[in-house]
Length: 251
Image 1 (cartoon, rainbow, N blue to C red):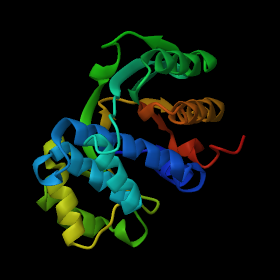
Image 2 (spheres, rainbow, N blue to C red; image 1 turned 180 degrees about the horizontal axis):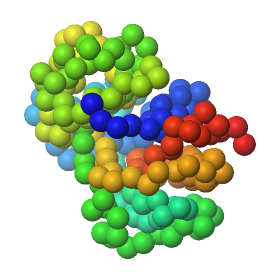
Image 3 (tube, helix red, strand yellow; image 1 turned 135 degrees about the horizontal axis):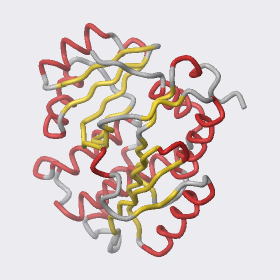
């Protein structure tokens, strides 16, 4: 329903082959812990926990991990203290970046995030520098048979989706954050299991990347940032042009 680059598809394919499941489960576990600590362990009365559980199940996180995270958040397995911090800055090519962290050591997080920015010749800026360029949106990713455009539109639009994109076997569904749970429930009822289901930041405008070297540099930057233990989410406002998408990752 809108113009789209192959950036999301490249990211999705990389995630399927490169990302360590342990890192994914750690990130999701932290979110579950914080959500349970803030709003209690009953997802029926805790929207943030309900969303975190939806994301965890989309990633096939084992139930034992989920149960342990809820118990930790509720204080049954010791106290959990995580601080939410958002870092902002610019990566090479003038690309705006938002890095969201959950940490028990602010100094460590700041130092590690700054190091990744510096290593890439980027610039970590102050609060508010680039966050205004992004809008929080519910986001679902489907692949394989589930990435059927007609079915996604039939189910998604009825449940409140405002943007649906299907390209190269990957489908993305976007919606306002308040429609996240309605969409999650609708997809589950229709037997459509997403590969990813989260509320994330989406850029209002993007920087189009037409240089293979710069595209690879940006992908390495994002990967290094995501590998940091305290990092929950990295959002950048670049799109990789279709003309070079197939060359990305070949360096």
